[in-house]
Length: 157
Image (tube, rainbow, N blue to C red):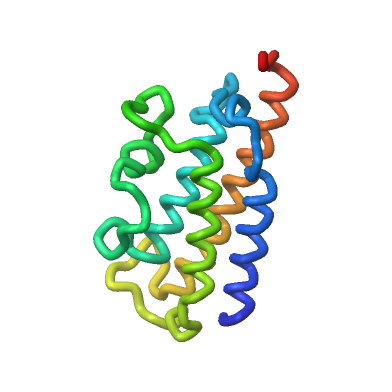
């Protein structure tokens, strides 16, 4: 587990960005029937979760606004959003910045033991691999939601 692990992350993040970059804000904010969230939530959730996993947000990282916890944490919903919500473009820029910071992590970090076990993961490398899986899972959700929204919604300019 080394350069390949980082390459896997870069591949998944690149595909993720390719699918959300430049997306119509209206599409990103529609919550289709049968789904718990909208595309914007999924994008913010992926950003927030990777920041938790990779950089120990919010205790050890200040790269994201604190209100992202209320907006994008597990169990939150766009129906409960209050205050200012970032745009898809803002989240995309933050995902790119985050990817650059992740690429700067030293390879040796993958072998580090986690301070506290997360699920069955004991090392940072195992958690890192889970982050890749998590990102691709949400990319699938975004892909499905976009198809449903485009097929069922009449979006006015």
